[in-house]
Length: 194
Image 1 (cartoon, rainbow, N blue to C red):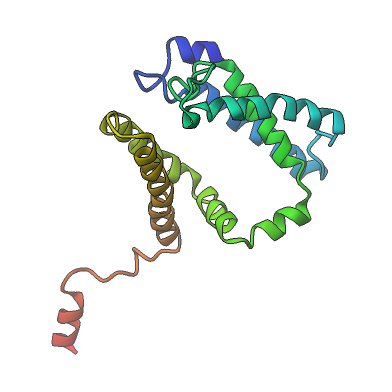
Image 2: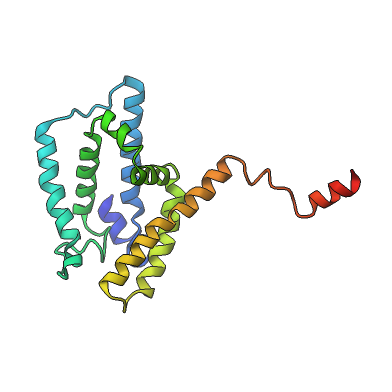
């Protein structure tokens, strides 16, 4: 599925969005979520061995992804071609397992911390946030080619903070805020009639 998406069926000419890879994440999440709801457990067991294995995969890949910040060239080039490397998929699976292993009590406490509340808010509106981020990153890639590393880091932080915009718009839409807005001139007509 990954190779098929990378070779022929990517939506973006540079391969930045691999439909089949995201579909695999989606199906895995649906399967594990459904099992969890139906049986009360998801089928994965928390294991110290799996945690160590996932750490041994995720930590070197984390370091590799951030070598560019140190002025070095990343070995796997995740930033240049993120979805053309099946190791990226393995990295996401390992990170997912490590996050899943965090006890629920810790998770509930972290959800009250400012930055984690922000991330949780974005997660509740993930489709809109991802669509907006694809628009931003495709524009940013071409606009920032001559900028320094520090300037690109500042722009990246601003872009992450701007992800609040589509999430907030979607939240307002779900609450029906746009349906309650009066049409232009409605108040004036009501006052004239009343």
